[in-house]
Image 1 (cartoon, rainbow, N blue to C red):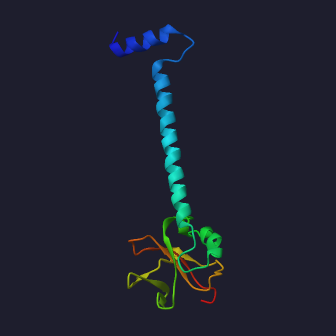
Image 2: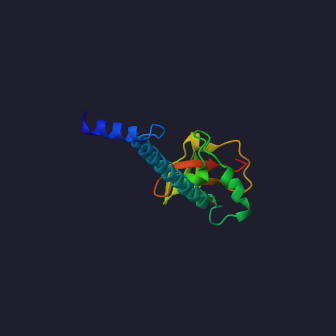
Image 3: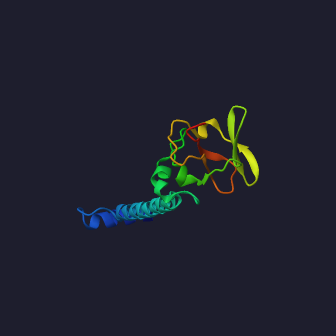
Amino acid sequence: MSGFRHFLSVHHAEDPGRAPLWVALLVMVGASLAIWGAMFALGWWIISLAHAAAPPGSDPAFAQWFQSLRNPATGISCCGHGDGHVLTDTEWRIAGNHYEVRIDGQFYPVSPQAVLNRIANPIGRPVAFWIPGSHEVICFVRTTDI
């Protein structure tokens, strides 16, 4: 009998009502992974709450509205994955059949999948969300009069 099989048979034979040692080790490893996974998820949740505040320069009373915004194609929270920006007239434009947003001094196209078309906009100005360091707009909320 090999050493490992002998180890398992001896430890299992000590108390027939008790689970083998390898089962106990497996349970401990699984519990540790579950705890680390829960801590990781909690960390991401806390980070998403930090990003869910109203963008700088906007009324904090609209924080709940900002939190409710979701990318229409993916369903992912706009606030949780990007920085929100309330745009001035010089920071966005319509170019042909799409919108463009000025990021870092240059205009970039907004994907039609990122436009929230059927959302009432209480801010009164267009709002765009993009990931810092990226030029991809992940959500764009039009004003209600466009």
